Every structure is written in structure tokens, then in C-alpha cells.
Image 1: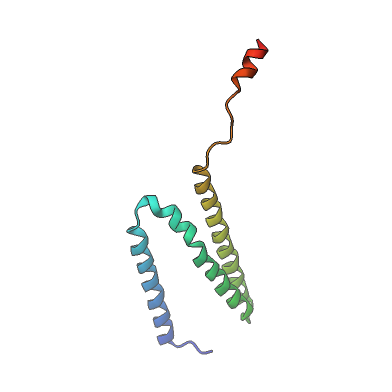
Image 2 (image 1 turned 180 degrees about the vertical axis):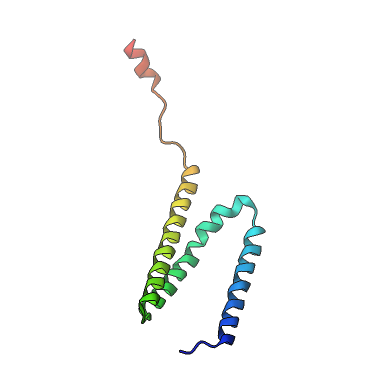
Length: 110
């Protein structure tokens, strides 16, 4: 595959457009919705992992293999981090499991 300067410019344009769009979308989300938005973005990170796996499997040089491996590693880390944050968020809404001391036990001890 031959990469021309025009192909590089188009790829750079798409990357810059995606970065700008992501910034605008995230900056307009109220702070109360950031954690649910992050838990929903695990789906997107899963697609990133699939894309990185595809790049890794089609890699022919050592540099491409290293970049593909790092893509899979960082994408999987993002997915795991999203699930950890989601679990912590959901734990905030669970009732506490500690039971208060039984008053009948206190009377029998005295």
C-alpha cells in the first residue's frame, strides 16, 4: 500500500475533525452525566480494541506489531477502567449492608 501525501492529509483532517467533535460533545455534557457517559463509552472502547486487533493481525513489520500491541493494551485498559468506574458509581447507590446492633443483645449483656 502506497501512502501519498494527499492520503496523509485526508487522514490528518479526519483525525482533527474527530478530536474537535469529541471535545465539543464532551464539553457540553453536564458534570452529573459524565460517569454514565463513561460507562456507555465502554462499547466504543471495545470497538477500538477490535480495530487494534485488526491492525495487529495485519502488521508486517516490527514497528507495526509494536504499535498494534500497544493499541490493544491501551484499549483493553480503557475498557477495564470504564467498568471499574461504573462499578464504583453503582456502589454509591446501593444501601449499606451493615446492620445496627440489636438492642435485645445489649440488654442481655448487662
